[in-house]
Length: 235
Length: 235
DNA sequence: GAAGCTATGTTGGATGGACAACCGATTTTT
DNA sequence: AAAAATCGGTTGTCCATCCAACATAGCTTC
Image (cartoon, rainbow over all chains, first blue to last red; front, side, top):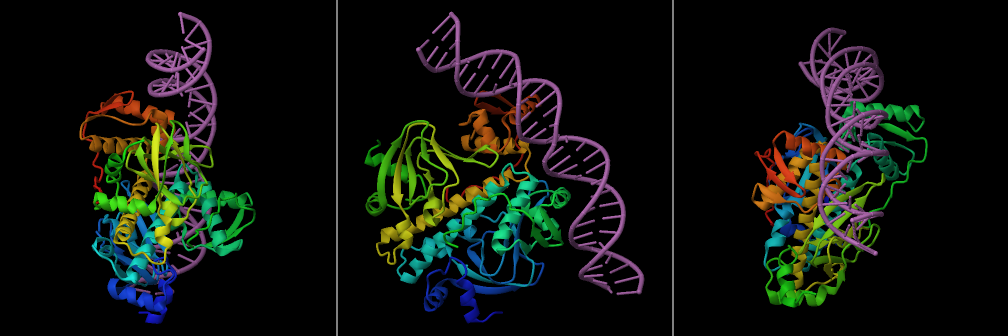
């Protein structure tokens, strides 16, 4: 259970409370905050098929959002950390979840009633309007992430997917040496490929001198192919 | 060039102007409408890399949104008709287009200045607030479509993709007999598969007695596998 | 109507990747 | 510490799909 001051600094990380003073955030929370809940490691936070009326913001911990497809494959759609939100699109649009969310460490989530902001006939408070603007931005950002994921997975070979992923991690870390937050199985699920095939490809790349690795620690030995690295204007 | 009355009825088809009176729509257009433009058949409307400050609403005609990937494959991301909008996510989030849009018939587009609604410090007019709400809904809907497309393309075989697509068309048409709006090459691009492989699979399905077809006219001969047909609560 | 051009189907070869099965190492549980 | 589970790597088989190339029919164009 984190304290209020911490909470505000966490909320400021995402787009939902961007450009808002601490007092405004508290004000906004007054009308939309619902409840907080802590989930132990390895518990389901949300489940495929759920209808959400609220969006969740991760105050601490981590979530894996995975989609089980018709063939029984587990596909890791997102890997979320502190400050990121879950169920935004579903809460806003009234769509059922197509994913389940599992806490990969003890995770505390703050739930916000956002759907009311879209139904109410009259919104007057400037804070609410500001929040609504942020809500739209956050939704667009989420959609943009989906677009990237879609583009990254279309007709791409296992090697290309690995290169994309490692290149991403390289840019995030700002260093040729970094460690990734996923084990092999989860990485394969994230890239939508078979684990053994991926393991194979990874070792081939090592043998070709492209990279080194030990467990989750990687070192890139050459320039990764240019990935139209376009940074998010909304961060 | 369609007239104003027609235009309003077209605008009402999408989510952007949902739940608004004709007078309110005109009011809203007064502040956000930018310009209209007509594109001849087979011309590019927008191009990969463009930065959009406006969203386009199709007043008449059709667009193909395609993404050329690193291997030179053309991937058909969306096929849009009258009343649908283009560039919503990009205009809102400030993201560059990753697709190009081509008019497949003469197409008239109305451009709307939506980004100002998100930057302005004070929004007062109720109509603007209502429109902002709709903007959020429309963005979520767009994101939901992306989610479906992503889920439909993950680890799915050519046959499964075809079944998904035909099942969709079946539901849209409300009849076992329907004609699809894409030729073979475009359909293959839409399903992210090779044309010849798809053609092959289609004929196999015909030989197995699952369906009949002639050019773009299809007839389903058996129940298509259940596709969690969940209809859009926002239509 | 001849000459192109387009749309669709067909074939064959090459191969990437899924799948199952197994091993050894490491970690977790009791 | 023993037992059990997890994790990563390796191997071999098999099939789906890509790719290139060609056939054919129907349109379009001059």
